[in-house]
Image (cartoon, rainbow, N blue to C red; front, side, top):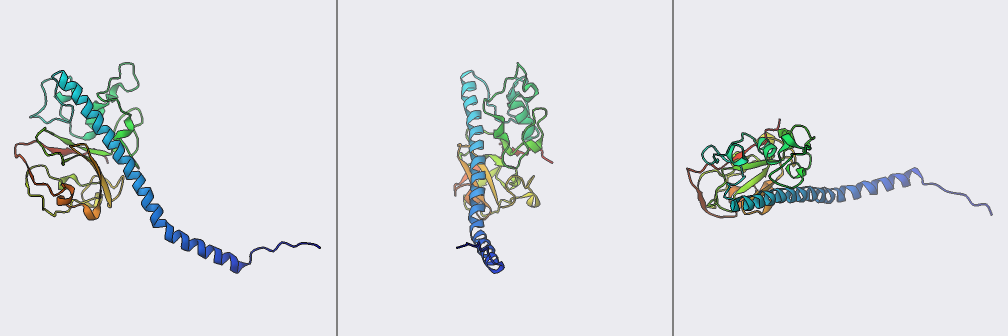
Length: 245
């Protein structure tokens, strides 16, 4: 007996397409959230690695009687202008250029202060360093300047550039209850919408802990873990922006 093949009818195809559409609508938020979590997790890991490398370099330098390599201010820099601690930087891009000795990158006498890969200064959506000239557009992190040992461990010292760092604390007393919103996104005063738009940003604290902060939790008392402290008025603590365009 001859067999015949029967294809799908138009109605059946439309039903299948409709079911697939419903499934995509249900699954898309979950998939999107998982992708966002993966991106922020990778960013947190890079920030933590950068923090660790700077800290390890500082430990080694302390044993030699040398100053910290965290960005300095005019009042806290060392007298050694041939060293990173003897210079003051206007952007985090300028600082990272020195930290990784990028003027000598690829040459025999390349000698960075830290030994981690250069990808720690970039991240999701940030244009990576091209091997010639580091620009603000290549840098993910705003970095704290004027870090002193007596400052609280909860202070962010690395902040993704889509956070408005001007809303973060840099001086004065803090009770741990202030509900001021720390704004996110370029339209809210941040340098850039890259990497995570106006919904979420990443910080690494002075104590070394990374943290992913969502917009609804971006209030001062939550960012600083309800901790009360005082940043002395004499402190030079502030944030260097990346200089991205």
